[in-house]
Length: 394
Image (cartoon, rainbow, N blue to C red; front, side):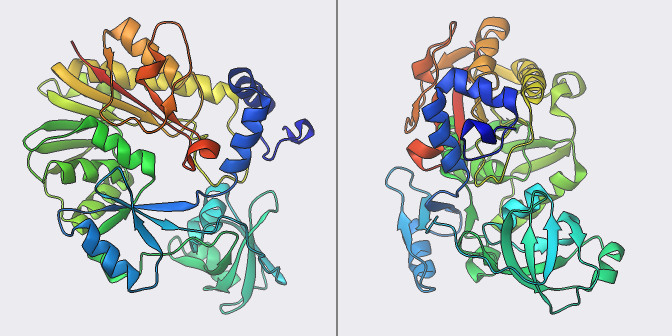
């Protein structure tokens, strides 16, 4: 790991060296410091199929929520949060959560049973407990909702109800407005991505890696629920999440399909799309807040090759003149500019300008116009680390 390099987060050595080679050490230090904290703006996407932006703002303000309108995107609002860490009590009882569950607890989520690694054997329902990650970082404090002898017998439900978390991010899921499908919590670059694809009513769209359905349902919203979106994911469980979100948001034009979309050009030969959204599995190095990172450089290389397989299938499915948005929530060149270079030089895509450009230019690499792709950096844009490219099939 990398603590000896004076960096704020623990990262595998080779991965960190590659980041420093591309961005420089001072840049990476600032980047990792920002990734360790949530953004100071918590974004929501207004479901304009059900409510206007101004009406949603008025309703949420009634709860005392400090909510504001984004100045660029007509369907984006944000809540200002204090991203200075809070003091979390340390109790007699300790619960260890896996990394991803701990990162959710860190911003106020409850700890669910599947995310528990260790539950002290003497814990009883109603005890106050401290939640830590596998490395011992304290992320939250709350109330045990189950006895320790019951933890192994249950696969679902809340293990600990979080009362104090490291960061005070508002929990909105209990609000009537959430249950009525009036908004969807989504990062700013993710909201922007769907706008860049610019879906229109009547379009046929393929979302190749659709779960949990944030961008899928946004595309449907922008299409005014008219047209069809083939939403692929190879996991039945993840497809269920898409269906649940679509139902809550009142979306009717999505056709969820359980399938590995790397092979849709073979298994769905009839499928032709006007537009494609490709947000493939990636190293997720831009996701924040992050406690530490376990992925290594070999994982990045493997993921880049994996991402190319989706692009190859997409080229066959996309109609001539059709558009494809490629986006990731990571910061490596191999998974971003490197993939765009492959799309242009090996597959024949054309890189084109984006209708909204709010981030910064991409990195200069031979073979692509770096000014046509945009990046978001946590310490510069107060957002997750993110990458967006718009491609056309000539």
